[in-house]
Amino acid sequence: MPSPRKATPPAQNRRTEAFEIRTLAAGLSALVLLLTLDLERDVTRNNREAARLRLAVAALASAWAPMLTLVAGHYAHPLHWKYVQPFAGGAGFVVMQAAGWMLHASTLCAFLVSFMNFDKALKAPQGTALVLGAAAATSQLTLN
Image 1 (cartoon, rainbow, N blue to C red):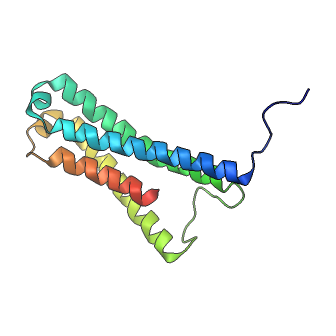
Image 2 (cartoon, rainbow, N blue to C red):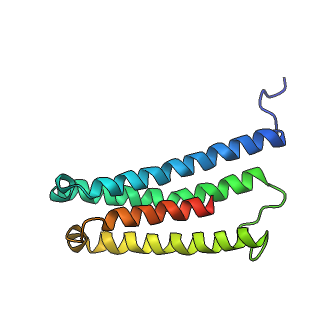
Image 3 (cartoon, helix red, strand yellow):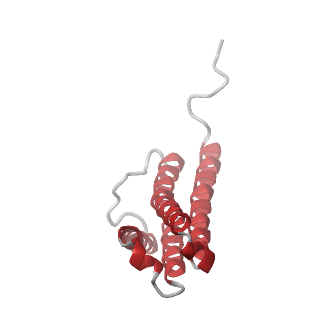
């Protein structure tokens, strides 16, 4: 009896599913933005454990969103996709990828520094966490 699931789905289905994976990555970016927006509230800043949890979840979501974009790219273009593609694609694609990966690395470093110096991060000026979340979401948008 043949399996109800085909070995290789048609190209259109693969692209649709890749779009769904990219949508999930965009949802993670929105979660990062909302969590960092919540970190700006005084109620959250006064509750250390709640603030620490929000910062940690925002950092993890920010780290995973670009990985989902990589999975979606591999899924949509299995024959042509490579993990490392230096200067492959048009000039616009190359510039967006370079800017996106540099911004992604910068925001992950900033999340790490904020988490390691948590007491000082809580005393940072209003808007600092929101700028970090917006930078993380922007990096995902450039990679997507």
